[in-house]
Structures are given as C-alpha cells and as structure tokens.
Length: 222
Image (cartoon, rainbow, N blue to C red):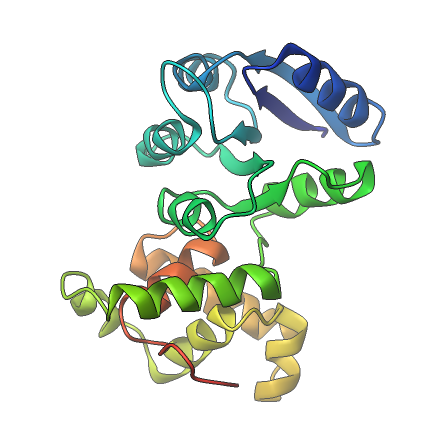
C-alpha cells in the first residue's frame, strides 16, 4: 500500500512543490495539505495519514506544538517528519522532544525527501550524525538527566539497555547486529520490546529518551 502523506506548510508554493515531488515517487501518495499547525492537527484526525511533513514556523499553531498534539494521541499512528529552512540546534532538539520521528532541511533533494518519508513511515527513523551531535550538545548544555522516567529504564533487561544505548549512538539494526554478534531479527525483537516497555513510538524517541535519562552520557563514545 502507498504511504499516505500530509503536507503542512503555510506557504502555498512550498506545499505545491512538495506535492509534485512526492506525487512522482513510487509508493507515496499525497493525502492532503494543511495551511498551519492547527489545520494539520485537524487534518491528521480526519485523514489519518502515515506521515506528516511538518513545517516549524507556521501561524495559529507552530509545527512543534502541532507535533506534540499529534503524537500525544495514543490512538494516532501518524509519524511526523519536521521540515525547516532553519538549521538551528533548538529546532532539532525541540522537534525530537515533541515527538517527531525525523528532521530534514527544506533544501533536501527529492530523493532524500522520499527516502526520509519511507524511513519514518517504517518506524526505522535513525538520527543522522549531525543531529546526534546536536542532541548530545543540547543535552550537555541542559545539565543532566531528568529524574521522572528513570523507573521505566529499570524495566529493561541488560541487553535491551545495551541496544537502547546503541540506538542513541545512531547505529542501525544491521550495525547493532554486527556489534553484538546476534541476528538482525533478534535486534528487531529487542527494539520492539524496549519501545513497548518505555512507551515510545520509534527509535528516534528512544534515542532522545536515552540521552535525557542517563542511559547515554554526553561525550560517551561507542
């Protein structure tokens, strides 16, 4: 089945451009458009797309607030790919904390955009090295892990905690498989279980959780 995408941007030319680019990609269907964050939240509720391309700066409700509302709905499986022209640390970090499954600059090529949509739709979102570095830097600036969710970390087995750490360092399932000398299917099982235990939607949120709760420390290397 085609991946259904909602495009949320307050600029008509941007929406139309993305619609043309994605509409020409195999396996991707543009389900609709939204003109601001509030419109995006309402259209997600009505259309239930697989992925939302979400601009950050929009009137009425900005993209970060809209992302929080969408991802806060436990019955909504829509994933958010944040798009912006502003390559700023605060946007990267806040977008990921808001529940976004990916972050991409608007100057990405059509192929990069389509690939990002497919990755996010599959739940295999990985943090690019540049985004990981920003996440670590921002985490270090804020000064340490939060105390609240730590109890949830204790629910993980030793191997699940190890897999979580490797996810936070940006490793793919194949790379984790090679590192731990286990099958890729075993890695996928560990990932699914730790996401369920931590009540997280995907790998990107798992990486953010790991940094915020002391599973991975700023400056730590793998």
